[in-house]
Length: 294
Image (tube, rainbow, N blue to C red; front, side, top):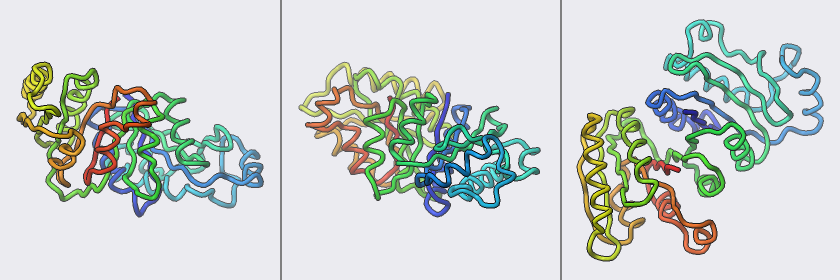
């Protein structure tokens, strides 16, 4: 399992990093934290090119180093990296330059051997998409910033599951709202729900919605199997059944004190473009974190 946590600033990314580390622990996952900054100018790129592997001779820090240093301090505080590396401090002088747009620090973790800090420069959507596709991450964790419809673009164009840390507060008492139906993605969403519930030590409401009156037997069976599986895993879980337009109902029931988990849409890209999809509608309109499982 490989997890990518995308951060953007010390001021706005604390909840993203906080949730990301808890999820990484739950999955015992190799963890990469990435900051995407502005594109490095041609002049700066030439300076970077003067040293491919070490930054010791630099008399300046490139943009974004302070964000990675802050992330390192957070990892150290949570004992997510080994004590020897914590004692040595943030190793900015060993930042490995892969190309003019990507630099990386390799760390040894306590939960997983592999913990990486990456600095990329360029358009945030393009850089995150390239990172996910080239490194084959299973889950990408991003903040819920409204400055740009980043989550919408990433859900549509990258292959990993997407966890949008939207309006997360550490003192809120959350439950998980797991949307279940008879679609192929439900089984994986249920498995992810168990891990997230264990990470946050919270219970689960399994929501199944009928859009046209009577609930389909196959959807009810999927809900019953999900509850049984969660209980076997030691998770407090109960089934909820409702009727209405699914995306609206999920948002309404979730409120601001749930973590929504649901499978990705099985519609074709063309259908998604013209009609939208339930996960995209939920992600856009909800007031809480949401994990869309692919």
